[in-house]
Length: 252
Image (cartoon, rainbow, N blue to C red; front, side):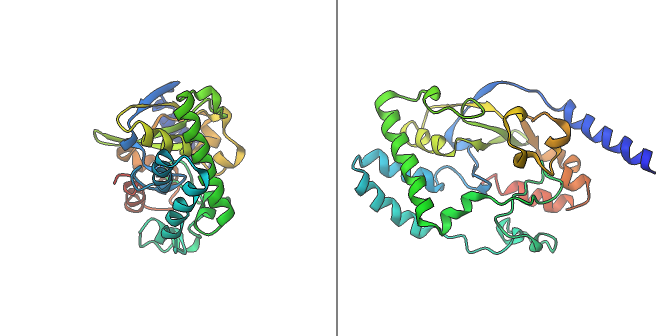
């Protein structure tokens, strides 16, 4: 039995690695962005984009903040658990708070870590920090253009990966939420340069309890058609229907 389990796991890893076609970079359109942190949202509904629109028009920081503060008052995340967060009737997900990190295409089960960006729903100091990043980025890009080297990250630029369903694909941003918001506002019809996620640059908390911890490589995409092989489904934590429902939240 133990030997069989080990062989099954080896086949599981082999399946994932066979689908990993690592590339360095690509370009995306703003309307392909599907998230802010783990929160599913189109770029037009993304509060960072809305603040970017304000900062594009208002160069006085105090006035821009006063207008942006109203946006923060309008956003609300009065959701208690992961089931409500993903709008799924799942008894197992009811046991985890909404801010717990869980992406079924990478995780075997919900992480012990929480998404720090949920502070944006209730912490005014954190809200101002998000605004300030957007305001400063906006001013810099207007003045100098977009020079990725001016905004270094562990990954070397805006990073993430694709989620695909049939011929449609969206881009899940891992690093660079503020930059994609500003660039989408300033240059709505231009493609945004991005890099694919690199496992070597991720923190331990980003890969713990995930398939990435075992595979040591990061895919450039996760597909709807491959749901049966996702770690959360393969491990039996959730079923395929639940995984599908979570995935489709990012295709709006």
